[in-house]
Length: 409
View (tube, one colour):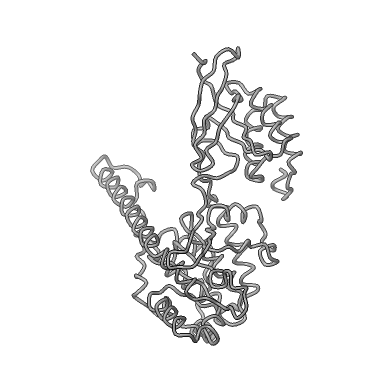
């Protein structure tokens, strides 16, 4: 009832609810409350963690572990749990998972970003970008060009460094191609499996049509980055040029963009986003800068945002729309006023944890370190079979509870 009215609970309120429902033995509602708390808070306070501990101590068939160790690199866990008499112990192993946004949460976050973007950007320009993304997406790697090009450029006579951006792009080309190849293979396997199911269904007794055995929609094959269609290689001038009113198609919805990205093999190269002022005049006139820009354009690796725009909205929208496998390379903490206006800050933070790649650069062709998110999410979670719960606490420790169907021998 509280969710329907948009009321957000504090950790203490969640703790009180869990305690009350556990006291009444309302295990199902208690578990639902715990899941809501896990969605709302990545790390639990002392009060909320203690309420969860009391819940698992009371719930039949569950025990709170005596101790638990978590490998902060891999997410592998090892817990020690005692039997009911506290005289015997058993070691349990678990693996923390990467928790991505649900389809509904991704749609909600993208809708919020899209709404703010359309309110602040030129309607024609942003709609043109959305159509470009529908054709090209999903994008496996996106680069915040301004952030990479201005990295450590705080000394006298410094300026935008195109070599730094190219250093990032060069590192990402091979994994971008591999990511697309994996998507193509996965979708081909899915289609083959669906075709096999359809053939078996057709050879058996006649039955009503079943959506679960129908072949999936064909995969949309996206042209390679080198095969320009006037969008991949669009110039900054084209990006600024709105269409005439009688040429404007019906605007795409965020849901249509998500559906297209989910069904497409996507781009096979990284894409760098740069404001038009970065590609005209000043440092952009240098020989090395022109070489980089010409190569990115020719390879379909550059998207230029128009004058008067905020390029942040463009790469953020594209990154969220591109799904679970997309990564944004940027050291931007995304804390300025624009990001604070997003309607779902908890979802945005959850998305950042799984998709932002930070970097460090030093001199030399190989002077680049990329810091990808860990292979697991540092948040409260249960396994897919609901046989254990792992809950991180704000003091750096973890609470672990396991389902003990059999007595410890």
